[in-house]
Length: 182
Image (cartoon, rainbow, N blue to C red; front, side, top):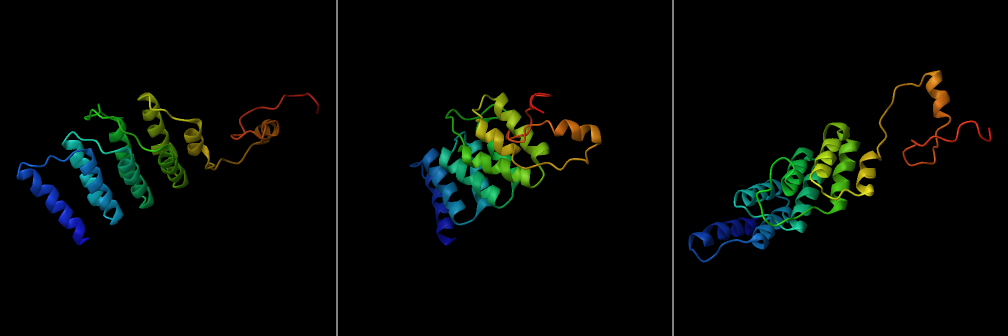
């Protein structure tokens, strides 16, 4: 923790001396140091300060930040970082395009589904990603659909229809051929 405080002191003091202008690697290193010392709130502040300075962290740093926020179940903050990285709610304020690893996005969507926030937070996030033309793989879409949603008891007419569904399909949404071979 003491080393992290010294890193912040140097980070703030050197630019004032006029010899140092932090670039994306320096900012990202500071953010990763915060994550490593489990100071996620400080890492989030560094990320937001970077945004204000017009610098975007490297993909690895963005991914680490989102992973850390997901691990701590700070899901709204994780979504905010994704939104900022991809410019989903506003135009990106940075020139360099960065991203977040797909596995990290999958884990975010999975925890949103497990916590019951898929409809409220996960689906809108996926819609924003797709609208911004961010590559969203089938695997990522499937991760959002893995958790079953409880359903109301079935009526007898619904049950008859469900007996004809192909339960071998991953989402159980394909109908079997009706009337053949039965």
